[in-house]
Image (cartoon, helix red, strand yellow):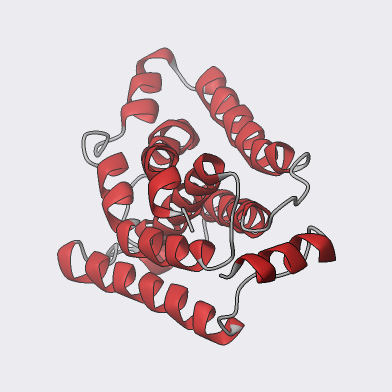
Length: 213
């Protein structure tokens, strides 16, 4: 981007789209990355065998809605952080609302469960791998989002990188739902969130380098 173009952009206001790449190309890039992550999940892990049966259970629906809400929050954050001068005041609230709801459900589940069941509800059977699988599946999506954001002239590079990683992690968590055998709210509230936080942390570290323009 030339200096004169940047000056004109900043003068036009904070909500101007700085990207010269057509929206359909960005959508295709990110959609393709999600497809790659989904194919990786199918090839390496496979679908949950009882997916159709469990999909009707409220706890499974809660899990999917939770991570989908985080995807939406992350998408909004990425959009705002890609633009110079965009307002960010509401972004923490958008992310906090689904988190607080899930944490509340997790606490309620643990409170109502028998003492000897609480550890199993938290640890599940896949705690050793869950967060790392989500983080791994997020990589193609992470790279695509960074590419799109870099083309749109972000200025808060560390926050933008964190938002990209957060959104990629949440999207990968949605993909992982198709395989994951865990549905307990305490497990989701900790281990899924950890899997999302890992790429968010990586994004915060590499954002100033990879998003510089």
